[in-house]
Amino acid sequence: MKAIFPVILCAPLLLSACAKKPPPRPVDNDRFVTNIKASGAKIFRFTLVTAPAKKADKKGNGQRGQGRGNPEQHALKNAANNSGQSDHYRKKLDKLYSRLEQKLAETQYCREGFIEIDTYEAPQHIYLLGECNESATEQDIQNFANTYRDD
Image (cartoon, rainbow, N blue to C red; front, side, top):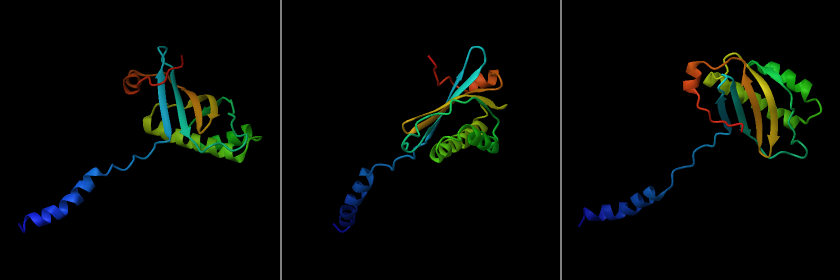
C-alpha cells in the first residue's frame, strides 16, 4: 500500500503535464517565393509582415532599381525615391531590403543581384517583386521549387 501512495500523488502531475499544449512556434514574418520561367528567368516575391499602417502610408514606390546586396545603396535610393513619403514607410522599406538581402545571401537565389520590378504595401504586409540578373542554371531548377504563380 505504501508503494501505491506516491504513484497516486504523482498521477495528477503527470496527467497535467501531458495535457499541456506545446508552446506556439515563432511566426516567421518573411515569405520568399520563387518562380523559374521556361526561358530561365528567375522571378521572386518577398513579403514582410509589418505592423498596421498609420494614416496614409499605404502606397508603394513603384520604382525599378538595381539590387546588389548593398544596404547603403538601398538607403540612398530610398532617400531619393521616397522623399515625399513618411519616415514610417521608409523604415518599412529599409527593413524589407535588409531582410531580402539576408534571404538572398542565405538561399543564393540571385547570385549576381536583381532588378526590382515593383514594391507595394497592403494592410500589414509589404511586398517586393524582383527578377535575378542571371538566368537559372540546372542546379537552380533543382533547388528552387516554383512556389509563385503570376497567372
